[in-house]
Image 1 (tube, rainbow, N blue to C red):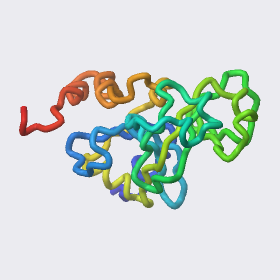
Image 2 (image 1 turned 90 degrees about the vertical axis):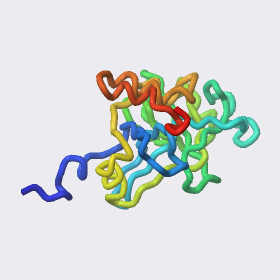
Image 3 (image 1 turned 180 degrees about the vertical axis):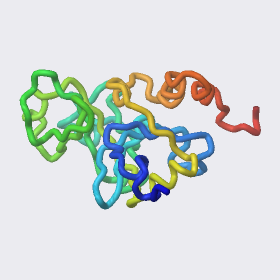
Length: 194
């Protein structure tokens, strides 16, 4: 018999993975969200929601980063935890040297130290987004939610965090899974209205 604590789902890092909300998830904070894991430590998992663009322009809050923010150059709701905190997610140039202002997440994707001088970080980047708040789970909490069917874990594609149409990302991720999973993309937002 295998202990639940040692199953692969319990020991895998979620950094760089997409956590995609299933239609059964009842938390309105995460309805139809696509979250990318950016941290997985002993105290839990941290991620940012990729598909909740706001109408608040980066230039009005972090004007020094506005020129680097990709289209749309708005703040994204990264999650319900610490909504006043900002997290930068950037795409590093292939030939950029290592810099401690950039913490790798997946390949050339990483988090940015927004306290640094943007002029120091700009030469490293091809693009970035700014997220307010984040999604966080205590140790074992995310695994329990996955076991309960609230989330699916999929591989991220490099373009996912920088989609020009972030509001369509949830359906796009489901569609590309193929087979029966692709049908979830057509699940109505309100099944009662179907």
